[in-house]
Image (cartoon, rainbow, N blue to C red; front, side, top):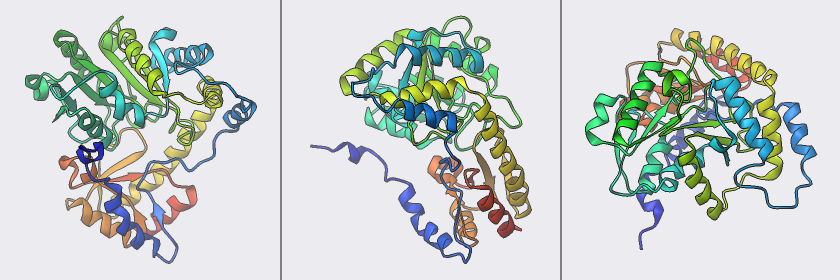
Length: 363
């Protein structure tokens, strides 16, 4: 018997733990900028919606309540510019489980190829390993077309780099996929956090036309609404792909809790709290970016999202050590692929006080 864990890489964050110990030894404590987990409070309007729905004794619907699906479709229309029906959306238990399980739920096997970005969120790799599919790391049609991948992952805005794909880049991928019977899945979890460039969804008619054929998008409320602890994600797009994924999830019991579904309805209907949170991150970015540059780092890409993608032209682990010695913990770019081996990912997810502390130490 072979355990699934034997197919998976070592959990990368375990390698960062010793540097966390170094950073925690700083006389003023650690500034942890390594993980993109929200630190600000859940908006009160959402917390109240959750509290009002706690009397929820029955099993919730895997597909989500009709009200939730309608809220998702309305949100997609308002925010993404996508015209979706309630049958073209479904809730997930956060987005990470979906990314990890989607190749399995779509029926991919060891005979299939999955294309992921050259520098990428590690869970794309994990999902491919679960199905024993062959992985191709590439960023354009020209690079992976000869491998004829069954599934192509896009990530815009990117984790970790903050890169935003253009309409033309996304449209080219969609057109190739439709011509070759492949599926395009775009991870757009940082969509609401555009800084120097405005992100565009793969479901935007300028990308996919009037049809969602062969196209899916993944979204999350974790970052825009500080709901990482609630685990609220969404899969949207081609109904002929959504339906079998939903059917499999029913059998597997992958059901978002009822009170969480009610809170999600309120979260998607309210844009004010998103604007407030976005301004918090903008202000933290405006302080941290020049401080890193003043300390000798170059910031590449980083047009959107929660991270600054930085390099000093050295091994990412050397940069991790240099920052840890100053009580600042960041993620080595190597975690995201060999092409990131000379960068570090610096998260904006710390309180204003801790960001100010990091700025002072860098100065």
